[in-house]
Length: 109
Image (cartoon, rainbow, N blue to C red):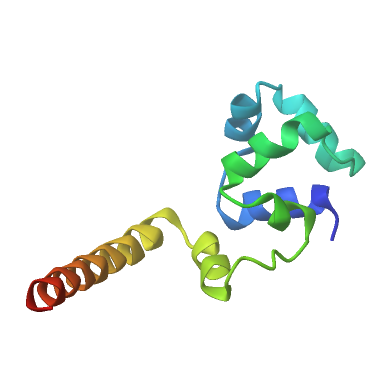
C-alpha cells in the first residue's frame, strides 16, 4: 500500500472528512480529491501535517515499522479518541498508584 492509499484508508477508518483534512492542510478539497483520483503522493512539505491530522507517526504513513515503538503504542494510535480517553484514565490511575507506592517505600527506606 502506498502513502496515498494509506492516507485515504486512514481517513475512512477514522471517519474523517476530506473537507476537514483539506482545511487543516490549507488546501482546496479539489486538491485532495486530485490526490485520490490520480493516486499521487502528496508533496513532502505536507507529510508532517498529514500525520498530525491523522494522529499517526511518520513511520505509519510511510508504511515502515518503527523499531522503537511497542506493539501497545501501535495499537493505542489506532484507537478512536473516546477509546484513547478510557485508556488514558486507566493509565493515569495506574501511575498515581505507582507514585504512591514509590513515595511510601521512600519513606520506609
